[in-house]
Amino acid sequence: MKLIFEKSVAGRGQQYLPKCDVEEVALPAGLVRKEAPKLPELSETDVSRHYTELNKRVHGVNSGFYPLGSCTMKYNPRIDEEMAALPGFTGVHPLAPAYAARGCAEALETAEQYLNEIFGMDACTFQPAAGAHGEFTGVLLIKQYHDARGDSKRTKIIVPDSAHGTNPATAAMCGYQIVNIPSAPNGCVDLDALKKVLGEDTAGLMLTNPNTVGIFDENILEITRLVHEAGGLCYYDGANLNAVMGVVRPGDMGFDCIHSNLHKTFATPHGGGGPGAGAVGCKAHLIPYLPKSKMMDESDAIQVRSFAGNFLVVIKALTYIMTLGREGIPEAARNAVLNANYMQSKIKGTFEPAFDRICMHEFVLDLSKFKKETGVSAMDVAKCMIDNGMHPPTMYFPLIVHEALMIEPTETESRETLDWACEVIRSLYELGYKDPEYMHNAPHSAQIGRPDDVRAARNPILRFHP
Ligand SMILES: *Cc1c(COP(=O)(O)O)cnc(C)c1O
Image 1 (cartoon, helix red, strand yellow):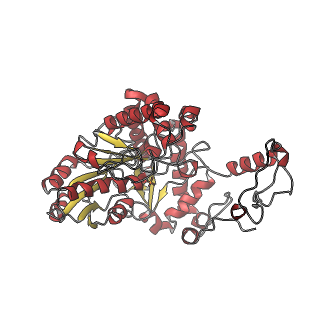
Image 2 (image 1 turned 60 degrees about the vertical axis):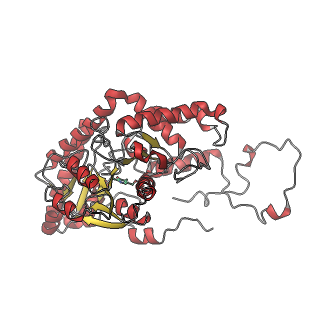
Image 3 (image 1 turned 135 degrees about the vertical axis):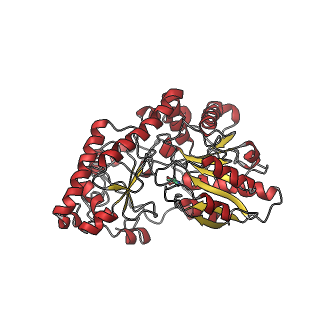
């Protein structure tokens, strides 16, 4: 397929611009371009067809099953988009005086109240632009708290090995040393290992719960009690809150602060679909440090981004919460858990679950035995899924499981879709023993087969050079 620049024809499409009906003003010479920008020139029909064609080549939530574990690609209700497109929300200027933006302020306050309720926290900020940014904000709150008390010997953050990879990265960005602790054989935090590392140098613990193998830690209250006893604070990575929203509250589990990805849990599009938002909630003792939406705030509050963050993403999340309501939010969580367990038990007998127990909203398959017997890797299986019209699950993550496929079906999939997906997965398991060669060469139907992903990540070519 040709790039839009290659389809350009000089002079085409210019009739769409209205004639200039005001006096032309010459810009200062220093500000004027030396040559015209190389923009593609096309008719509206050509542009429309170009993007429709690109759209057909992409697999999105609106085209099919997309069980991306941890990153939650669930259906985004259209009404969320409609509300975020209201002119009162899109037309507001961040420096507008308070009286002119009262509706927007009320929307933010309402969203904060709902999230306080869901998180079990006392206050919330929408400033962080995404999940990892929210973690950064939350850990800085912990740091400010210790600093304000003159408690400078707390230099370590404890991170279990089942945490999301961004957790240790965040702690390091905030200047902490990371203490990694192993999981017990049941996939939960090893309490003895935790007790051993707790001490006067503990600033806090970052916990992803349910963790990255889809397990809700059964010792959660004991964990937060132990950390507090040592003088540390507890951070809850609730990026993906799909299994627990409206059912249990991280605040009640003893956590001091939390971030949640509005773009994973509260149904606003992400990935190529739009910006995200990492809402950060905290208990009363951390409120003085929580970012305020005002610029140039002179309190102790930290500032991680301008104004109120990605405001329209918050509007989508608010709409989502209001349309589901007090009954719908926990019902969505229960269905997310039900769908994951339904799939996990249907797949059993082919690829084996990494932890053979009831899961939360996602589960991890361990393909190492299958690979040993057939030579077919988790990557090969994932590529074959593309040929079957299904987006691959998250692969080779979490790191504690080898040849991992991490499946999160989400609550928005029907039983028919789940049955179909289980059938595809079963057939790929059987194919592994019959025709491994075919699987090594998959995908056979996709536009792009197997890109060199390391090179693509290290040396991305992001600009077109004519
Ligand atoms: C996705 C995710 C993050 C990071 O969120 P981003 O918006 O991608 O920065 C952190 N923790 C967990 C558990 C996640 O699933």
